[in-house]
Amino acid sequence: MTQKKENEKSGAIFVALGIFLSRISGLIRVRVFAHYFGNSDAGDAFNAALKIPNFLQNLFGEGVLSASFIPVYANLIASSHNEKQDKENHIEAAKVASIIGSLLFITISILVLIGIFLTPFIIDVVAPGFQDEKKLLTIKIVQIIFPGTGLLVMSAWCLGILNSHRKFFLSYVAPVIWNASMIGTLFLFGSGNTQYNLAETLAWGLVLGSFLQFAVQFPSALKLIGHFRPSLDTKITNVRIVVRNFFPVVISRGVIQLSAYIDSMLASLLPMGAVSTLAYAQTLYLLPISLFGMSISASELPAMSSIKGSVEEINNFLRIRLEAGLKKIAFFIIPSVCAFIFLGNILVAAILQSGKFKINDVNYVWMVLIGSTIGLLASTMGRLYSSTFYSLKDTKTPLKFAFIRVLLTTVLGYLFAFPLPKLLGLDASFGTAGLTASAGLSGWVEFYLLRRALNKQIGDTNLKVTYQITLWSCAIIASAVGLAVKYFIHLRPIFSAVVIFSFFGLTYFAASYFLKVEEAKKSIDKIFLKLNKRFKK
Image (tube, rainbow, N blue to C red; front, side, top):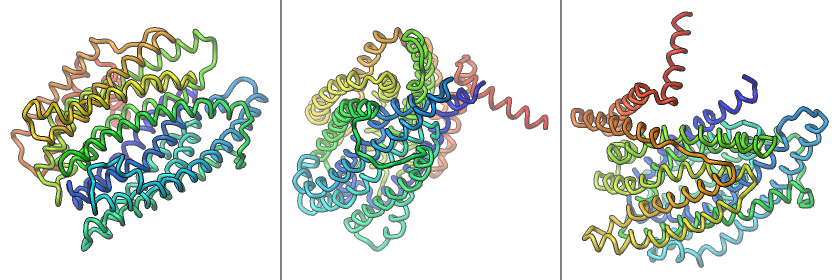
C-alpha cells in the first residue's frame, strides 16, 4: 500500500480522534455550564448570544472554506509525475493560500466591528421573547464574543491548510483548548458570583479560548504553506475560482444558519429554559454527526478533490469512495439513533445532571433529543453528498437544496412548535422537541434531493436496504440489552451510563460481527490480530 493510500485510510481516523477529544471536552464544558446555569434566564441569554457571532463562524469558517478553498488548494499540491509542474503548483498554492487568508482577515475584521455596533438593533430578531435584564445581558455577551468569533474563522483557514496536507489531527483537536478556557473560567469564577455576572465573565473566557485555538494551528499552517506573503491580488485564476465558489457556499451556509436562528427565535417564545434545552440537546446530537459524518466527509474531500483522470475514471472513483463512506456512516449513526431514543435519559443524566440541572431538566432534554433522531442519519449522509459536489467544484446544487430545506424547516418548525402541541393537548414545552423533529424531516428531503442530483451526474449511488435492516436489527437488540441492564443496576448517573453503554456497544458489535457486517468484521479482526501479535511477542 502506498503512502498516499495510507494517509487517505488514516485520515478519517485522525479526524474522528480529534473531533472525539474536542467533543468530549465540549461535553465537559456543557456539564459544567449546566451545573452553574441549569435552565435559567442567564443560561438562555448566553446560549442565545452565541447564535449571533457564530453566524460569522459558520458562514465564513470551516464548512465554507472546505467547500471552496480545499478543492482548489488540495488539487494544486497533489503530486503528479512531473516534478517541474509540481514545483510550480506548490508556488501557486502558497499564493492562493496567502491571498485567501488576507482577504478573509480583512473581511472578518470589518464584519466583527459592524456586528459589535449593530448588536442592540438585531437582538430582537434573534430573541424576540427576551425582555429587560435578560435582553441587556444577551446584548453585552454578543458584543464581547464577536472578536473571538473572528479568530475562530481564521482558525478555520488554518484547518483548510492542514487538512489539504492530510494533517487532520491538530486542526480538529484544537477546539479542546477553546473548551478548556471556558471550563477554567467557570471553575475560577463560578463560586460567589451571580449567574448574570458569571455569564459575562464566561464570554471573556470564550474570547481567550478562541485566540488560543487559532494560535496553536497558525505556526503549522505557515510552515506547510512555505511562502506566506499577505496579498489582496484577486487576478490569479485559482483565487478567482475559490472566490467564485465561496459566495454560493456562503449563501448556502447562511440559509442553513437562518434555519438555526429561526429555531432559536421560536424557542425564545416558548417557556423559560427552551433555548438552553435546545442548546444542550444540540450538543449531544451533534456528537455522532461530528464524529462519524464530519470525520468521514472532511477526510474524503481532499482525496476526492485530488483525483485526476477522465470523467469516467473520476466518476467511478467518487462512487466507490461515496458508497464506502455511506456504509461507515450508517454503521455508527443507526446505533446512535437507537441509543438516543431508548437510553437517552441515561446519557443526558450522566453528562448534565449536576447542581442546578435536575431530573426534570434531564427528561426535557431527552424529549428534545428524541425529536432530533428523526433526521440524524439524513443529516450525516447529506454532508458526504455535499462534500462530493464540492470536490467537483459544484457549490450551486447544494445551495439550491439548502433553500428548500430551510423553507420546510421554517414552516414545519412553527407548526410543530405551536399549533401541534395545542392540538394534541400537550404542554407548551413539547414545542421544543417539535423544532428538532421538523428540522429532521426537512433534512431527509434535502438528502434525497442531493442524492438524486448526484446520481444523475456520476451514476447510481446507494446504501443497500438489506444492509440498513441488518444494522437496525443489531441496534435494537443492543438497545434491549441496555434497557435490561438498566433495570438491574442502580448506580450514580455517570457509572450507570458507563456500564449500560458498555453492554450496548459490545452487543451491537457482537451482533453485527455475527451477521457478517463488513465494518464490524474489519474492526474486530484488527483487534484480534493486534492481540495475537502481542501474545506472540
